[in-house]
Image 1: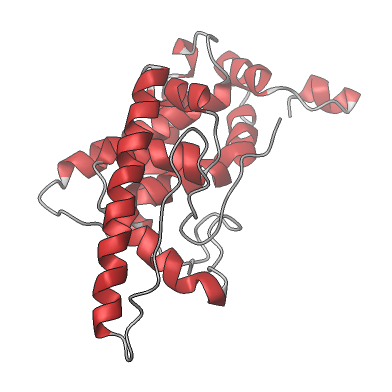
Image 2: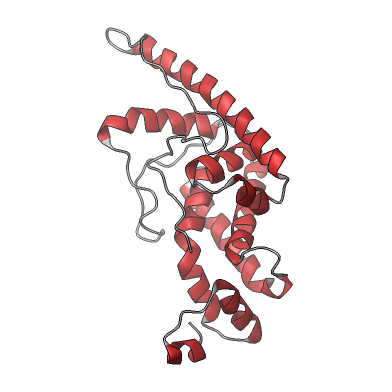
Length: 229
């Protein structure tokens, strides 16, 4: 909070904090990061699938935002701008390791130096499903994974996800549809493979991924809805 707003007891908006940072307020950007770090961390973690790489991607993104804040034109929300930078940092890291076809996704544990409260362990009754969904999500192409994470896992509207990824709304819808179809197929295969190895077999169990805008894909470790500001 800037000194003037603190005196009046009014919390500044994100845009006001960013302008204060550009004007030289040394505390403004830190306050902006505190507001949004957990959601940015959740997106990075589920997009890139590795805790250390996600942490590095968020750090790189926030450094870039800090240095380039003066270039923010205000044609989107500040949080949309921050998400775009974080997702791009994640996608850059994913592209650099394309030689690795799958990425291990988080297991719900966390270390003390990571943001808290965004990656709870799955309920015991749903733990198997959560693990299968993580694996299927990890196997998606990076662009489809990013769209699925923003729309189906984080709960952002398609239009806002399109802004974050700097693509057309139709592109987000297409990526989500293709990603959901691939996940549905992958989940059936994973279920079938597990059933073949399970005592007594579980061939009767199946898993589907809802299609269409806003499908309620079960997220890795729990559904993290964006709070409305």
